[in-house]
Image (tube, rainbow, N blue to C red; front, side, top):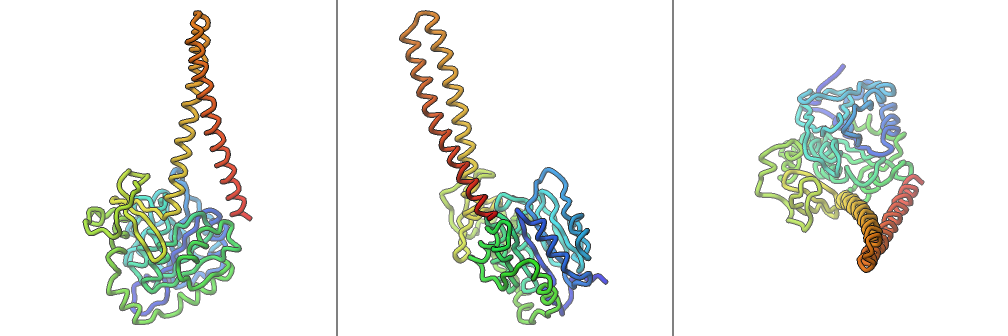
Length: 352
């Protein structure tokens, strides 16, 4: 029998899960161990391409006794469901229903994990269980911190078993997680939490509302105009611009966690912003390499033309320009090769 999670006596019945690289396998393992009568609703964000359909609900349905689906905006929240974020949409939790929004990207992703965790914490407080699984960088850490701040339960996959350990390791280093578990040990813990009544004092704290920053950041993910235009913005202007829209990034501090958000809502952890800047730099280097190669070819052509016309001094000048362009291009080529070697080494270390 299905129930909505809207009653006075309930357990930790809102379970939110975030995964990225290496996530399909662990998500399948997680849901395989959950019973059909689990008195909770599960919400899943997996970083996926925005340009095609997601087959994750089909994969999970083949392995789970629960029903996995892409929800529609406004769908009620029902126990016994696995709600999977659709491509290019944030999956957000409201009180009693689901919101599917084309909000600003966070940590360069849509769907992103932080908006799901943050809105669940705002709507259901201590009833929320947040789980961070395998993935690169650190999406989910700020959201998991919001869950803990609202009295919820924080769980991270054991980084030693994660195919990509960056996401769970970041959560462990920055959030006071309640459990660090291999995925195989998570299902019985979730069953216990779902049947464990949340203390009344926690529910009262939840109903008193979350803080202003949580409201504002959740509102931005929902494309709330009031949140975007608010002049009472937390943090302070940084010296960085938003890679998505070019606006000023505001610097936010959650304990030891450094984050950035622009006025329209694009959000970055320090690590994801650095990763984006690396991509921008690489694009600029490739553009410079192409320009230098084209400059060298053109200078060589002009030198040849000048010699054929008997203008030797002019030809020498063009040849010098061609040689200079080739030397500069070689410097950039070595930088790009070194960067590629470092990325390959980091990938091998993550997999190992």
